[in-house]
Length: 551
Image (cartoon, rainbow, N blue to C red; front, side):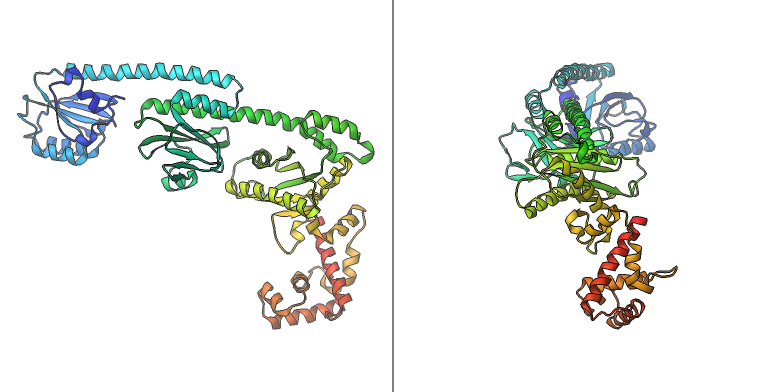
């Protein structure tokens, strides 16, 4: 836009004089307004350049106060006052007010016509708008060409950086640097950090300290260079953020237009990748569905191997299944979120950083993942899977309050056993509440003795008779003594340590001893007997398992 400083250099304004508000000479002029009498200050808009004869500003106290109010509101780009018609010279109190407000105050001699001033400025504004439109169309054409090609994000950034004369940085939805093209010599870039003259730029800290929405356009400066930051969104997904740092030390309206085009193009690139991934997920997902639900006798292993290789997935390697489930979806918001798609995006973001193959199968409020496990010890393999799950969980918590539980099945090399890994992963989620130590990531091995109870349940055998013969009166009648069952479970889990058990239950040790005596009386078993303690422990586990199935 045309600034006050630039307007003062126009031939038509050669005889004018800036007498106050020099600090505001870079204010942009959006429009020119000429008035004889200032009656209503509310009619003026931000960025207007006011030209007035100053009628009544000397002798009329109301006019003078109104004019001073207009100066102090700082809405205008500047004010031009004619001298020689109604005021011989601009009063000092107007000059002082304009200096204090930083509002340019220009003196115009009566030898210059109103029309001369307004025409000169409006012509410049109109010409610049036309040039802006032409440049915008040119940029749009270039962006369209890039969008129609399939060069990939890094190549697109390279071309955009050259086209805009800017360093460009793309961050993911967790504020981590994911792609960039640097032009500034003052910048150093590592895998995860930008340094500008040795000062780190941390996007998360900037957004937290700026106090504005992540969906808004941010304008700021790194040293003397203008920066523009905007989110990259398509639909309900925020894929990340785009930071553009100009090489020139001043910004223009065109920079914002370019940024809008660039952000849209980056969004298109993300959408391309997402569409390709979505197609791949559909094709691979069909294969995973068949593998996880087929019985051994129905599986053509060679055919499955060939289909997997066509889809870029080698099923002959060690594999395990992860099952991620959202608990109480929508509990913290009224949004009808597609949780499966959210999980798919987050998991793909995290798994893509690992040097191993994976297939993701999104459900309504869950996700099934078939992931390659390196050929190492079972302990190392289990740790790798838990670490991958922790990355997904951390990413999930970054965006959502809904609880996510991730179950991990055992690792198998044989294709026909992958369905077992899938069931194990689901069991880990289903029975995670049975464990005393609460966690959001559960390997099937963590269920311990519950493995046997699961096999019993799969065989169609009932467990109620088993636990009733040992727990006796604790589970008889309409009201089970759940308080005593919890006391018993905690006492056994704490290796029969009175003080530790009382602390865990937040009760006095004398209360605990009284409860233990009740348990012995109602079950007919002794806490002093190792065999009785073992039977009681197994009975409690069977009781919990049975009631988890029923609920």
